[in-house]
Length: 236
Image (cartoon, rainbow, N blue to C red; front, side):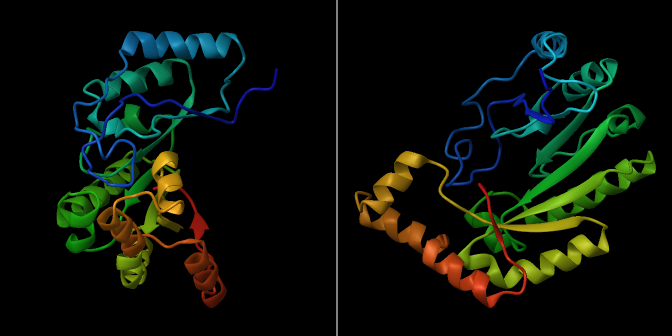
């Protein structure tokens, strides 16, 4: 059996951002659960023994949840290190974990999820303090590099109609801090809402908000033809 290159393992089922187009964001912070360290470690051992993962596999500690909200994140990482596996995280950077040599030992990549580059954009989507986020990103990057982390930092910039003019500012911030900049078009993550939107079954105010915020397929095709840098489709 060939092992997977990447395994996504959501260690918490909730997030403190309030993104209206995300499965986690529309729920309260206490809406999900978190995995115990024991169950997490046992699951990794099982996956390794069944050859689903190996030392080249990256265990990505996220999908819809915010991994740094796990109260035992360092014990989670300890379990990964004990098995000599690689791991990655995606974070909204609202929390800064205690970063030490153990934290970066098998760290492969950190992705920063950003819904714009202004407080106005953050207020519309994440509901977090923009300046705090910038400080936290810089601190996480600097702390990791202090312990000789050589992997990648990535900004996943979610492109909405209201934050297009902020793209360049974010790219410059990324360049100044040695972070890879990757813009993606934001989309509706809920298939049932998408289906209702397409079939014009949503309330008029909700449908209008979606149309005002998100690019549709015609918008994306036009923007891609106009731009020298194609923006990639992805979930937010």
